[in-house]
Image 1 (spheres, rainbow over the protein chains, first blue to last red):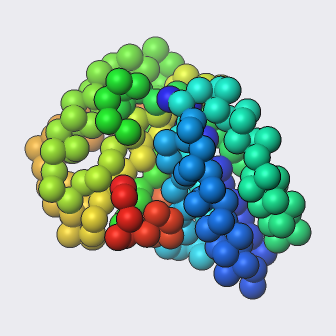
Image 2 (tube, rainbow over the protein chains, first blue to last red):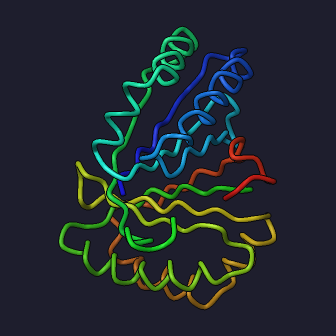
Length: 102
Length: 102
């Protein structure tokens, strides 16, 4: 499993726009064969801070995601609302193991 | 749903000790009624950097976790291996919604 944890800081006032756009991306990404999770989180301490927690079966699945219409639409739509560059960290999943429940 | 994303930087050379201790905490935490996930991740870029992605049903479930023997044992065991203080960020989950699959 490959996990991308993406930190997103949105300009004040654009939180609801970001949530609306990201809801679509969440819904469509979860339909991809290679996607296992797409959790959309909002910080308790700072409502302008979001985390996207994305789990894919393989590198190929990540690349396929980046080519989808919903990803590209989302990326272009939210771009002007970013307060800073998105920061993605890539992880390998240790537990659960790949053959366990995800 | 309440999500804690905990960033852990381990002193060089203690990565495997940390993984072994955290495997037990993962396994036991997943048995808690109020816990939905406990993903243990290792950064691709920096193998000393880990993320614990923990999802609980409620604040009560978080508090119950903190009182368990396995949590306290883990906390005390890994303490000398920390290269910096653990940094936990608390989030509310927007999607999936609470009534959807987790």
